[in-house]
Image 1 (cartoon, rainbow, N blue to C red):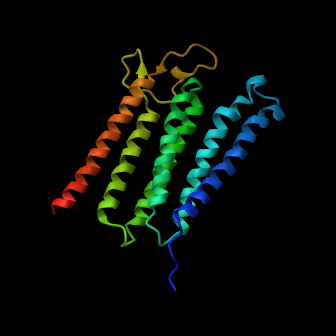
Image 2 (tube, rainbow, N blue to C red; image 1 turned 45 degrees about the horizontal axis):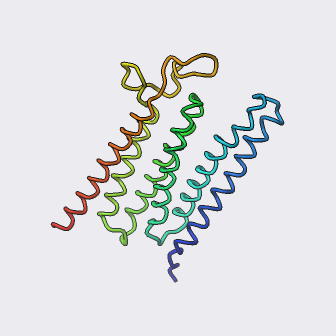
Image 3 (spheres, rainbow, N blue to C red; image 1 turned 180 degrees about the vertical axis):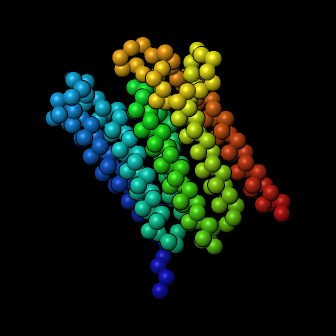
Length: 216
């Protein structure tokens, strides 16, 4: 007897539990870890509040999304793709906020965005094997994943403020502000403009795919 698709609310519940579970663990690790190890001074617990907590929560949501899509062989993966979109939207303001830290912290967010693209690619590949999912939906999801990959590249090589450089790698020593005034600073406004430009192109292509489908 074939199993029935898992209800969207059950999927979302699983994903949220994973998010809060890993988020709490990551928060405690970042908040209490530096105090126990006596590193980082009095400001070290801020790591848990602003860095490890939000990132752990996002990674937990991502793992829950992957697990939900991987174990549900009969659903349309609509819920999982919506959660991927939500996690991506969460990663963008986290990245912009963490510009004040720079360096390895930003690379962690870029790593999260890369993971989102990989999970999205896995789900898109899985959806191609399900006849219930129309080719139009698969094409749209593919376009969105390519756009997410392009935005991830922009995050890894963001625009620089007040410089002739068009972009710079997030781990470039010129962005290091831990020991001295950095040589370069990332331009958040231009970063948002580039993200928006890529997103608009992706949305336009998705609409075009739908119009071509209706016209055929």
